[in-house]
Length: 75
Image (cartoon, rainbow, N blue to C red; front, top):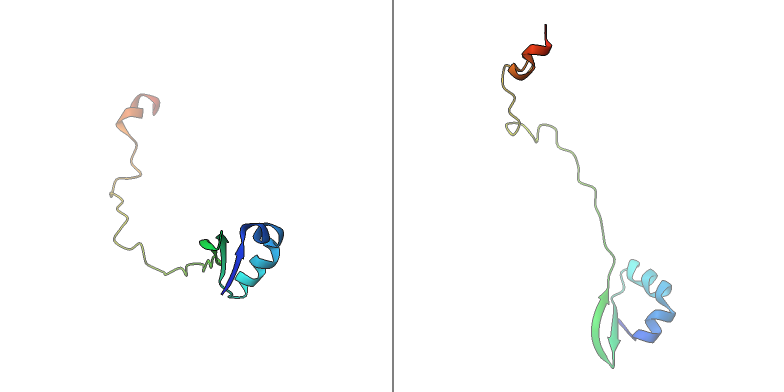
């Protein structure tokens, strides 16, 4: 774990970010009191699962029938 003060963090932010990406825990302190931790955000893409929406979608049997509201325009 690395602990630095705010001034040092502002001056060397790029270096501290790189250390966090490499797995190092970086803590930023104010007056020797830890206030924040700099960590890497890991985004793993979700894998698609075929058939995962099965049973969740309902479509009536007459979904493609003309709507009564438009009957006057159908002639």
